[in-house]
Amino acid sequence: MRRRGKRRGEMMRYRLDLKADECLMLTPSGAYHAACTEQPERVRRLLFLLMEAERAPGAQPADIESWAARLEMTAEDVIGLLYSLQSLKFIEALAPPLFAPRGPLEKMLPPLLNLLSSSGRALLSDRQGLYIANVGFAHETAEELSALGADLAALHARHRYLVNRNLGLRAEAWGLLGADGGSRIGFWSLRIGETEFNLVIADVPYLNRSAFRDLVWALSCRYGKER
Image (cartoon, rainbow, N blue to C red; front, side, top):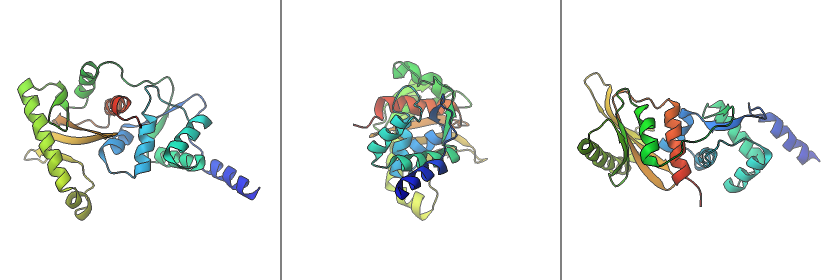
C-alpha cells in the first residue's frame, strides 16, 4: 500500500500542462535538440517517438504505457521525462488535429526549406553528398554545396571530441562567416534514426520556426521509426 501511494504521489508531482483534448508535439527547439545535438539516448528516443506518426499524439495512459515499454522505463518515469521536456520548452501542448507535412519529399520539402533562410536559399542532402531537395540554389551550386556538406560532416566526425569535449562547445554546425562574424552559409547535421542528413542554409538561418520542426517531423515519419 505504501508503494502504491508513492506512485500516486509521483504522478501528482509530474503533472503535464496538457488538457484532455490537446496533443503533444515538439517545439522547434525540441526538434533541434532531437536531431542536431548529443542528447541522452532516452531523451532523443522519446522526442522521436512523439514524431513517429503523421498525427501528433496525445498523452493518454495507453500512449504513456506504449512509450514506457519501448524505452524500457516505468510509466511514472516517462511522465517525469515529459514534464522535464515541457519545462525546457522542448515540447508543447497544441490543439488537435496536427499533422506532419504529407506527400513526396521532393514536393513537400522545398516550401519548408524556403522558410528556413532569410534569402530563401536552402537544401537538404544525404551523407554521400547528393541533394534531396533544393530551393534557391542553381543545380550545379547545390551539387557542390552538398559535396562540401558531406566533407564537413566527415571532418566534424574526426574532430567531434575536440569540439564538444575539450572545447566544450557542444556544437554540431559549421559555417562560412563574413567579416562581421555573421553566417553566409551554414551546415547542420541531422540524425534521424539511422539516417544522417546535411542541412545547408544561406544567410540568416531561421531554425526557430515551425517549418524546421515540420522538416524534422516529416523526415522522422519516413526514416525515424524504430524497427
